[in-house]
Length: 260
Ligand SMILES: Nc1ncnc2c1ncn2[C@@H]1O[C@H](COP(=O)(O)OP(=O)(O)O)[C@@H](O)[C@H]1O
Ligand SMILES: [Mg+2]
Image (cartoon, rainbow, N blue to C red; front, top):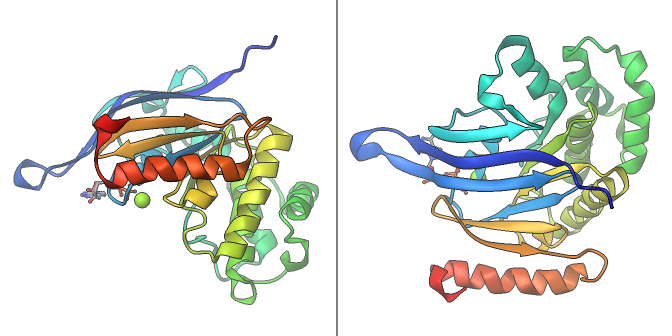
């Protein structure tokens, strides 16, 4: 049997904002691994530390202590070209508010990470069109963001996160600005890309519907891991997993960590 590859190791990660009276301990020592091909969900109430965790992994924030190791390499040791390469090629980031550039077409927005790394739009054309077919945005490739629906914009943003074929896609509340129909479409697409291309995805969400597409969920409360759920995608449906997620969320809401 093939051993699964470990992509990311997060070890005893802490992050404290501010000093003295204004100190907030957003992460209080978080440890977990991410395996290749996983669709990992991070759930927790607002303010529990989800975005802080994702932004530490994305190197947008510097942890206070602890380690983040990508494919055996400690990312805190990355500088200059190596850091730019990590940000541009090894991770893809999907934001809640899409963050597309309004004066660029969908095609140009998707190609942006490649252009930053010197790949020409022409060379990227085939890759862009393959992703556009997968994400059902082929018909908006030459439109500007103002001419697209919210759902289309987020799928364009997803294509941008995937175009450099990153080791891991980090998504922060990607369905947060979408209605339920567009959320479902996005989750079906992400789930298909995860399944068919074995693409590793780590998604922060407080939406149980979105989380039910994941293969594993870590629940965070007050900067600590509180619980973990796993779904065997061969044997457990999205609907059945949703029901189990809701049970844990109810316990989180009550703040009663000791009931589990
Ligand atoms: N830049 C910041 N400065 C000070 N405190 C912050 C900052 N960003 C987040 N926090 C605090 O850290 C905690 C975790 O925030 P965050 O990671 O954004 O949580 P979540 O994404 O789960 O809502 C919260 O108490 C929040 O107020
Ligand atoms: Mg957040």
